[in-house]
Length: 300
Image 1 (tube, one colour):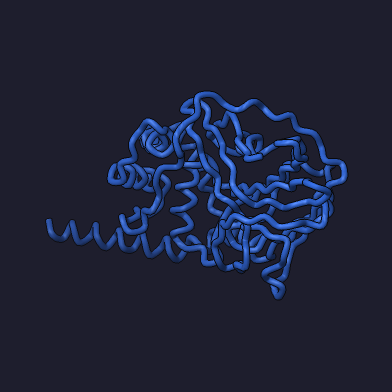
Image 2 (image 1 turned 135 degrees about the vertical axis):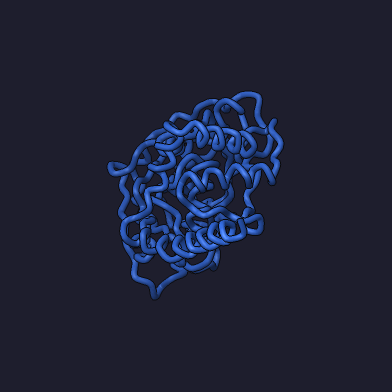
């Protein structure tokens, strides 16, 4: 009996060690298809689907309490089915993703195309090589609180850190549960006010379809943070106009109008209205996520 337990323990340690070794290499070789595997299991494996649904209810339904112990158990079921090592309690730092609920979704905002928008997005080359390159851009112009607003949403293929460790795999699996996607989506606003243009990187909220849960999306300004750092800081800075350059400054795609990594090789994406999709963050989420949203709330 002891020998059997010893064999199981050694096998578990070996699996974890192999995952730590091979996961970064699989990412560099073209990416571990967690999203595809997740969706395939969700459609074909009843136990996997049940674990995901129960976990999503705790995370996304305002009326379902979050039981951390049970959530950890469910998440490890998900990880096991995905072929990933279990996460321990010390690394499981996830929780509720909604801040209450709303009675009804906000009225839909009609989008128009900002004809004079000329946007250049500059991304560190190591981020693109890691599989996190900019994939699509959504733009939407509307009036809010008497001001003209251009909402810009950037869709990146993933959000892998420079170290690409097992924690990246855990975090990607968690995003697939709680966001319904592994792509990273970021949004900022260009506000025209008093003859000036401000780049607003502060947050907003999404309304989940069904539960009407209010999901707060944190601000994404980079401040003085550099590529190897994580940053989600609210910030509002004056911009030169609707012809501007935005820098991806950190590995989790916090944005700024100043290059915080001047010595790093870059990849440049030129975005014109003809190349962008017309839509808001709401539309980007519904295009890329397995979850569905019925509204978006932006402060005036």
